Structures are given as C-alpha cells and as structure tokens.
Amino acid sequence: MAEIELDRRRSVWKQLAEIIRKRVDGGTSPAGEAIPSTVALASEFDVSTSTMRKALVALIEDGTLWAGPGLGTYAREEDAAK
Image (cartoon, rainbow, N blue to C red; front, top):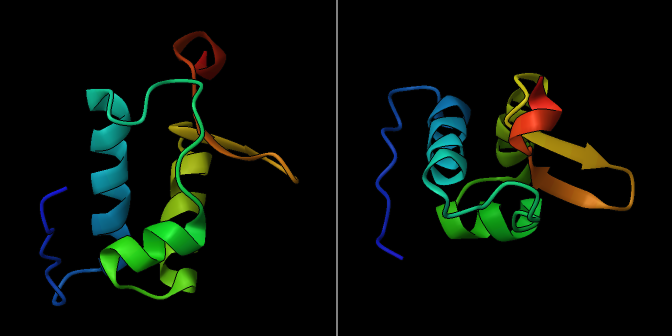
C-alpha cells in the first residue's frame, strides 16, 4: 500500500478517520469484514494506539464501523446502519 503522509498540523485522529472511512466506502475494507486491529493500524500509520483508538471510536459513533467485545471491529453493513 502507498505510504500516506499525515499533516501533523491538523488533528491526526480526524485524518485517520477520514482515511479509514474512504477505505470502507471504497471497498478496501468491505462491509461486514473485520478491519485490522488498533495496534496494526497504529503501526501502519506510525501513530500511537490511543490516537488510532480515538479515530476508530469516532467511526463507530458515526456508524461507519461497529465493534463487539472480543469480536473485533468491522465495517458496518449498509442495512445495519439504518
């Protein structure tokens, strides 16, 4: 995957949320499929796990992702978001 340059002058977690939302919307992370773990994503983007967690929580709150205790985090399916 191409290297992604984050603008450190902007809120990093918001940029990460935008990138992950685009992955879900674009089909890179298809609906209903697990996304990589918080640790794996933090490593991919070279950010702290707390920053990545903040981005993921925002995406869960806006309905882009869903998470279950012990189940992982998944791209929300279209009908489930309604």
